Image (cartoon, rainbow, N blue to C red):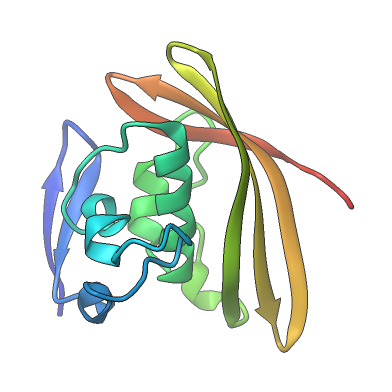
Length: 151
């Protein structure tokens, strides 16, 4: 059972006894080579706000690998956020890696991040190449939307 503490001002939550417990000293799934706890765990488990759009994007990738729908929705801009992602009802995805190709601050409160996420579904490899848009609202970076690039 998870204990949940909500921070209404940041729309984030702290989780205790989550599946991320074993990740504390493991390399972070985002590919940074840092331990999870010193990287995306700061955002997913400890409620810190990402300082850059790239940090938010990396933490969101990690949230997908951990099926942390709560975090994904909390860091999604309310104007474009879906009601649910239903990650647990989707076919099993095996996330293989993330490559950040570009992070560009386009204005003081706007940024884009281009990335490639690799994954497998039912043994078949896929690549998601996206240019994501982010805005900073009340000091917190939020994912707005993205353009998927076909290769």
